[in-house]
Amino acid sequence: MKNKFEIEFSALSQNEAFARMCIVSFLLPRDPTVGEINDIKTAVSEAVTNCIIHGYCGRSDGTVKMCASLDENDLYIEISDSGCGIEDIEAARKPLFTTKPECERSGMGFTVMEAFMDTLAVRSEKNIGTKVIMTKKLRG
Image 1 (cartoon, rainbow, N blue to C red):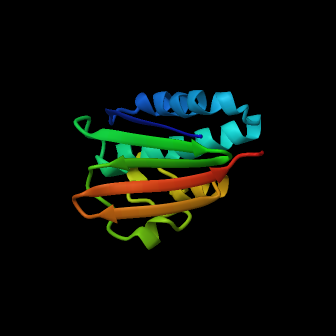
Image 2: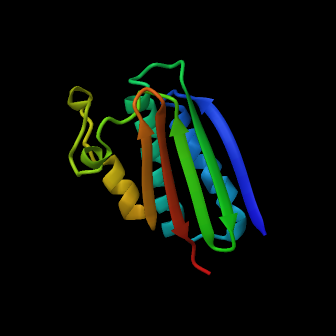
Image 3: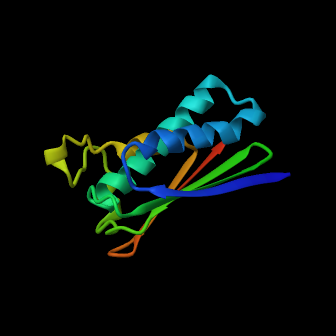
């Protein structure tokens, strides 16, 4: 049986913790391991933070959408914004790349997401927004 949810929240930094707690609450009935919870929370945190900081450049008038579904042991997560988009996805996915060095950003967001999830896809259009799609197979 497939279970799913979709939420939308303001692009405010305090909502990054809210997104992490939503995904954990969604997963708890599946009895995930502590490692799985930590991996998924970290990936969600990075994706939401990217939307807030890079997608909306700190503007608070944007929204972030998070959709997730769970089918057997397969977790699917989409996190998206309607912000400025990513000009060069290939460059943005490289470790240490950042467009916000003045904000002391490490440039490791996509690298971290990729390390903790099984798959990572990034779709973006200039002035339309960005969608991050991640999957993870939970222990069975």
